[in-house]
Amino acid sequence: MKDSEQERDLVIEKEPYIFARPWHRQFPPMLVVSITNACNLRCSHCYYSTFSKRSDYHVNMLPWDIWEEICLETSQWPGVIMNFGTDGEPLLHPRLIEMLMLARKNNIFPINITTNGLLMDAKFSGRLIDEHLVDVINISLDAFTSETYAKIRGGDFERLAKNVHTLIDLRNAAKSPLKIQVNFINQPDSRAEVEAFRQYWDGRADLVMIRTYYDSTSVTGETGPNITGKQDVFEKTDRWPCQQLWRRFNISDDGTVRFCVDDWFNKSRIGDLKTQTISEIWTGEEYNRLRNLHISGQFEKVPYCMKCTEWQGMKWDYDYFTAIEKLLGKKFV
Image 1: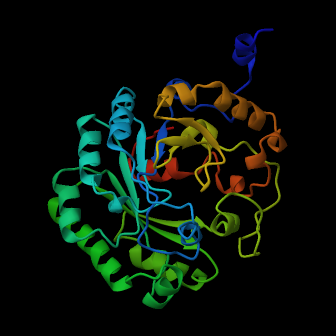
Image 2: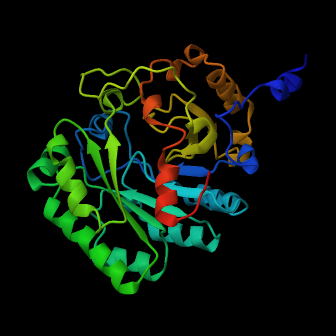
């Protein structure tokens, strides 16, 4: 059998692990774009504090020409979620506002920004609202008190709180459709504040998200076992395929593409937007090979996936698409 025929016969879907909509076979329903690998914080649960000290580390900003191509191709697929976040703080990119304007010009909806909020002053927030540049802003707080925030994130908690409240006030005054989500990673150093955090922000923000803490990513920069024992132990169950392979397309700050969002070293690299399109990579032989191995339970044949413990936190029936649906009142998968 020829290689092309083998590829056509490869099983890449099996109920309930399938592409949610027919067009998702041709283009991903969510783009997770890391527009920079620079950050203004050194959080205890994030690998950046270690990564940024490496001798081979240098600051990257996603090149404008790659962003233009991303927007142009994505504009052909209405309903794709554009999610700014992952490796760095997107507000540090000097052309962020221009990037958002270009995305809007290309009718991309919805647009989500994940930020630590410290650079989100009244001027920036006002522009987002007045020009309707973002649909969801996702703010990572991870604490309820300044003492815990300093321990976990090391930033100015009062400044952050002011920025978030200003954003809410401006949004409400303008009667803007912008949705605001606040996040809290449920980790040992902050666990005692989870309920106080939830009660305070419920009704102020549109959604309060309590996230799972993953140990290996913060320690090693990649998925793996619970190294320090701080990660919650999941209930034992049969492993299911990672939904990233059917739902998320992860773009690094240099234009390379990786199949795992938590891969700091691009060991899961699967393509490069400098020479390929999003669709070419998404429908390519390597992505389909990975889907087939996950569908058939052959996780040991994917070295990067073999030791992962994060798959159990990435449920098919409850993930970030669920949050977007709650916020915007529209299904995307």
